[in-house]
Image 1 (cartoon, rainbow, N blue to C red):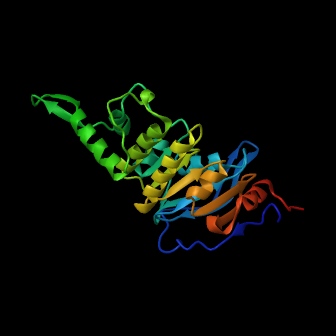
Image 2: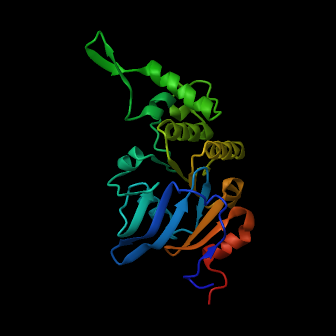
Image 3: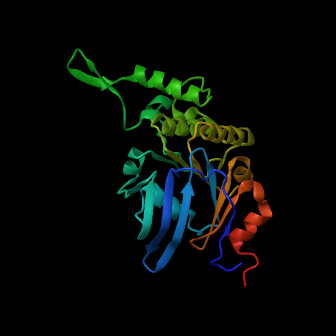
Length: 263
């Protein structure tokens, strides 16, 4: 396999319209090309793992989808509409939710506030003054957590008092509540114990069952094979593999990631 040869396999989900489609996107930083001519499609209810060694271009690719960077070349389409995003907030307004490894949660605040952070519902007091509608936030938070089959005994506890798995659950619930069309998860099980890793896997499968597509960035092959339908492999800024998870094993992935067999 040469550096520009791409391994692909047929995707049974590739019927109808993809939720998001990238065509020939490229991103440069000065003289460095971080992502080169990458195309990909993500379909409803599909879990796609993005794999690759450090410096392969995974994070840069995701940051173009999530509005952190603008591609220097190429196009991004949401459904059938080309989109250009100036910021992560704009991406979120379009339904692209990214859950980074640090989760971007406020640890001194409770779960309900974190789910609504920056988009708090307001109510009027005495017909004049406005204040945050905490009762509505609590009711809605319970509803979305129930939808995801998540149990958190006390939603009023500060996030810092919750387990790693519960924190991931709150971050996922926030994305789902705001009608995410696509959820991106960056190393979702990093620093989690085995039981909490399994809970995150269950949450990803729940999103899949509700037709919410998920992109997972992970170095953990166990994570990838536990949840992914399809695996996209990056190496040196290029997409070198796009394969069904059921058709490859760990050795195949490692070979793609490091370029085994190249001349």
